[in-house]
Length: 620
Image 1 (tube, one colour):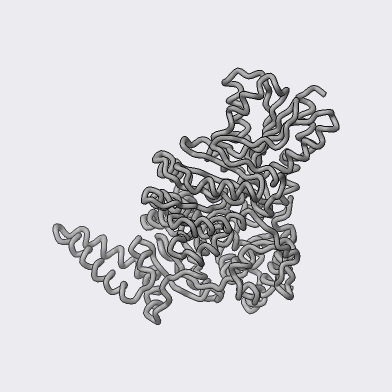
Image 2: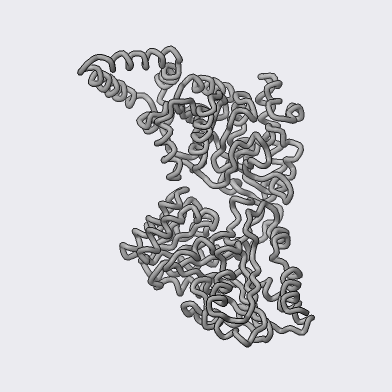
């Protein structure tokens, strides 16, 4: 195998050009083989194999810098940069990450996982290069919807002022950007990157600028004439108008064309954007036909394309989907908003039934939130469904545009808590903290299917900002027979006990039940309380603990600082209560990839550790 000859960065340069196509076939086979076992982002990585090979031939690692956007298309890059032998550990605990990671390899120039960051980071590298006076190449790859993010446009706007080379690859696999209009495009590509042409252009500009009175006017007229002609023939003028040279579009599966374009782009002393067209899922028929399904896929059978453990489970997203459709049927003011996550957030049926009231804004979480604020101000009832780790990108908009104005925007926080294999950039363990500190915000968390439905019904006419957070995966049915009406700021008593009161938040219901069961071995029958409201929490409940319980235990799947437990502890201290508080939560750190159950055990959300902590604090 040719791939076996690539064991470290830059080994690809020893491969004969005649073998490039075979190498691409082997890379695809290797990616498919390993993703079929561990799951992962298959379609994006298959779509950029030729691009990755061309970039590795063009760049010298780790001196040159390659910055991927989002990063779920970087599997071939990992393999070619010396991680072939450990690629079978992809997304497993202790194995390599599913995204570029600076700690993992010097060839990963920037850690990613969220979209639209590559151009900004690449510009930082370019500026660092200029300050040092070195000459390494810097390339940013953006695409797969990431260009819809506001950060990308902010960076493009800034990139237009660069006086140093930066190469931006626009990987276009589903976007409506102009196609090549013929031979004139090729002529302009060559002309605008030719070193002599650029030297002549700047020489003419400098000489004209020295002509008194008329020089600047002549320059402006030449620019206007040139731009008018280019508008007729050159695609991508939005980039040209920003001061970025546009090249393409070209076939993103042709290594030689990509390589040629990269060499041309290197001659330009400012930002250059190379537009390539690729096919998502290229090389695996099932992924080609269903690129979205195989975008992020669980382990599957290669021959049939079927998931290995395709169990039909009811998820919290399913419950939300059913309820929001029902609410929209009864109330024509209900609208749904998502940021490129209609499938993941359970909004496909809503979109089909109420297309006029469904808004997918693309990967633009900040816009989604302020857009929702406008809808709320206009008299509608917006539900913004976004994953926990992505919603944090819109913190300023939540605070400034929603909460200061106390607008009734409902935030549906999906995948709250530990999510597992996608790792550090996707763990939803900060949302309680960043929502908790904002005045006017109300936060709820359901323990089961019934409670989520009750909370959604409660949210419909709630007059202010409100968030409902729930985890990824199967919906719980625990204690579904206990379901009092939702009352603002009130918890629900699940079981009456003594000595210890356990207050859990949402998905920690099962852990609370198991802890209570084990405490009975020590003669302790604790009270169990569903917090329901993270903010405002039930102060009357806490006031009633003083002198009644020896210990209050809070359990949440969120980092400690800013969390529910810390709110309880602060309240107890401020009131001068004598009841100690034991806060069970995640440590204030970033949590890597692995299975959710294993990570929970590792970071303290474990029955035995919690029980031992309680017993120790009680002096038993």
